Image (cartoon, rainbow, N blue to C red; front, side, top):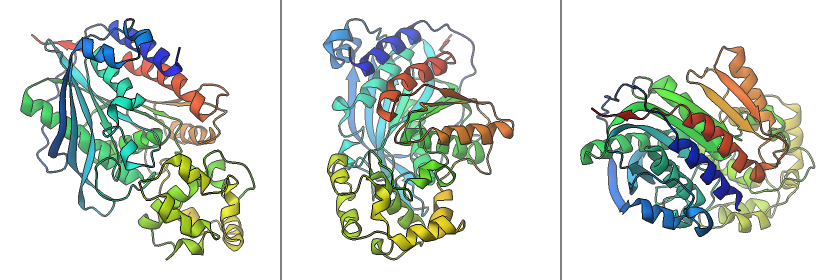
Length: 409
């Protein structure tokens, strides 16, 4: 059985056993423009039978899908790093749970290069969308799946791992979900808000928790978060050393993808040729334009990624703790000047070959030293791809135990 489908089977079984408890209704109303829906691209009503039919036949009859859902693919207003209001896209899945007030969940997806590969565009062929369709139906929840700024049908170029843009896109889709549910009178929220995501989605999950707790605490009361396998401390772990050491890296496009983001966020250099050797400098804007696959991008770059950097740059970075690249990348770390308030569990495999386990170790240590309710769960020696199903299984098992559907009187 496919490992992702096995996860779905176990997870929806867990959700089906939830008990009803008392939880206050969510009464907050946000009246700003961010989160306003620009356009509903697609609206689809799915019955329990139709949801089951979307899942692979070998397990569809076993999955305990309980609620019909309405799926909205939307374009909405968000804020980029320059504080300009821009168009973003994403999915809002609303369970039809007429007798219950329901929680609000946001799932943050992993690394995507092509705009057209974002969840809202290729939804029926996207495992992450199908996963969250099952989560919403089985758990009686509203689930948001943001594309992130610059992906899907949103404006601009995606600024990979930029924490501000990641968090804004998540927060504003949560707002859009609240607005559409209220306007359509298709649900009542119970006040619970959950965040989870894997890989880049782990980074985006933590970035969103930071934003909501520091800037939007009166608007969103986070119940719990589960960041999984994210690069939370890139500038101060072995993740940084990939660009300096002569070691193999399985997805070499990650480095130039990140550099494109850094170049747009900070005035580091005027051209890629000041950092990268030929021919890699000229390949970056072509391979990472939002329309090429990651398979293609990987063929354009060296699997020993340090070979792509100009030697004098590598020497400068090694010898200067205040090198501009180090300083800029620190701005993408998520472990400084903030202590999580909502419970957080970090899920990661110590054998991760893409996003190194040390990221989670550092974040766990930093947060716990400041008194946060944070726990690191080591999921074993699997690599980045193979760790994902286990992370989803145990992570959402924990989150599902906190879900509190409330019968409406």
